[in-house]
Length: 284
Image (cartoon, rainbow, N blue to C red; front, side, top):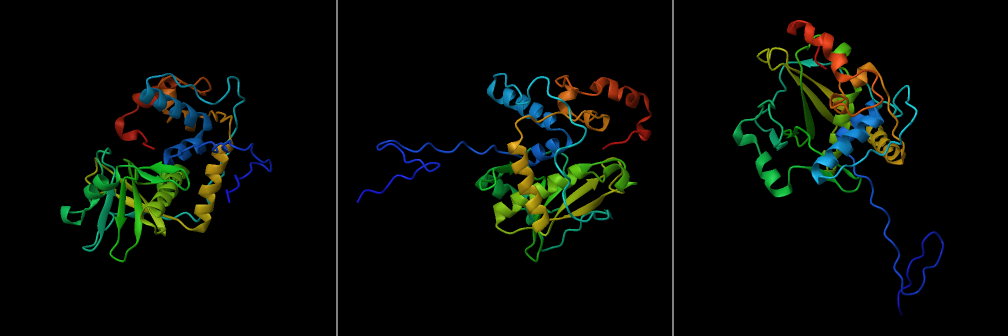
């Protein structure tokens, strides 16, 4: 007996015709989630800019012209308790392994001796980008570490010259968002959910004296938040701007003169900063 062709939305298909495939799910990266949290229009501009570079054709952002700006991010912050910053270098034991390192990221801290690194072999076999086909997520953590007890977790490196006042200057949701998404990539790639991800801060000009790290919890609450956040981003067909000095001063599209909603142009935002002595500047 010939198998029946499944119906779509309760309507039986015409004999001899095929059911159309559903549209592909919009693929997202940890960077997309971070920029959407800060400003959805920044995410759109960034994606359009990079797609234009890759294809050689001008790609316009999804946001309609004349969209009313928002006063705050449409994405709620992730759940979980904040962790205190731990001073000092991330300790590597003799049985720990470096499973992955972003091959295109320069200036990463050297934490592992060569005999404890499997990063090059992994990239040769699997490629340089971690891909979660189930969730439609892909990205590149700076490092992925396996402890001697089998625990696997991502490490995101942030270079900063101000270790003091972590919670004032560097305790941003942005780093937390990024690491939560990278934990999901580790979970999908190695088949084991990390208990946490690490944001590792290093003072490149301080001889390592101001190094430190934060462990960001990753459990059911964070996993559910990430899944809901990705659903919200994909459902948002407007992606309105959130103009604010704290957002615009770090926005790459604003730096390139692409944002018509910016509260201030990039040059205006950084004019006073260039006049300050180097030792007084803040790096975020």
